Length: 454
Ligand SMILES: [Zn+2]
Image 1: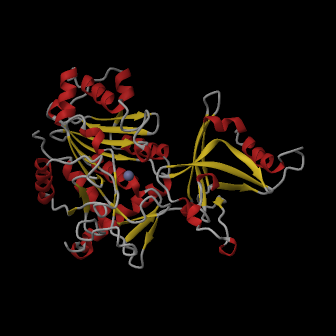
Image 2: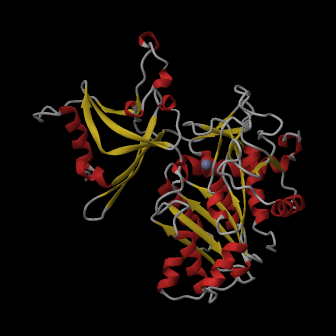
Image 3: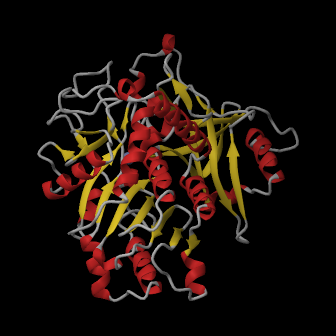
């Protein structure tokens, strides 16, 4: 086993880790939905000299080497691009991560009454253990769109706000295992005061009156995206403060580290791109998921503004690209060692993690990265003294998982999974090691400088 990174780091580097992770914690605490992540990324991109692709197209502005552009897709996905000195058709170094995380979404008709309570009905999103979402403070983040097109951004349950909660049965009355909780049981307590003036549905009406003051009617939930997420900020974890516990490390930790890396990339030899996508947790589907044509269309537009577009050049660009499918993996858990192969799985404080392949059992559904590509990456990271580990996720027959890797690989580009090891993956509160976060950022920065010779 390689040494623990904390032993290796100088005091100076530890200081850099702390500063980097303090900013990351702030991001993670504030960005709990896809839209919130995109809002953050756009504002930071503009501060770092990135221009809106939409504006550039409207003004028919030409792009040249060193120019920085971003394009947003439905406020839930985004690309950031820096034009290289080499023609774009020579390939792009891409770091792609997803910004959706498991949670509970409000239904289109969420409000109802039961036993003198006003409740909110939810439908869970992504792979969750349902019992983990009960008996803890929850917040509500999202957007309501009215018929006239005006939007109301909602954040409730953070800072000094009241919070929301889902109840769980006391142990004394429980016969069945509480792990039996069904999706339909995940209903949020919204209130317990009756509206005396209302003839019926008094508890529901009391809440509706509060919403009315914000200009939200019950029917407006038809056109809303509201996510129930854990309440409160990301925090340091451990007596030694070596870790961070927070909601949505999967995969916002790779989104954040990749963003910081591209912000610091000036005038690259080959074009570079950071990709933030939605819907990975439910199969990368829909207009904002990785299967959408949005990504290719945006590259076509950028090549066009750079005076380099034709169909063949676009196909060559996609074919010759390198990609880090930057997603998290499961770290070996000291409480539950048996599903892991401790020799071949990821550990905390050993640096960025690479999965040559993911998939389940006989690698089913995996993107299996080429050794030629991996050799190039090793050379690139060793030169920059980036610390990394090559691992699998769990014992061979145990299970497995997928990322966006296989979707990008169909263009014929080189793709490998690369990200941060996580404990408690897909739980409301996930844990990462600070040094792994920092080493991942360093890896993405090094990758953005890597020559392409595909
Ligand atoms: Zn993920």
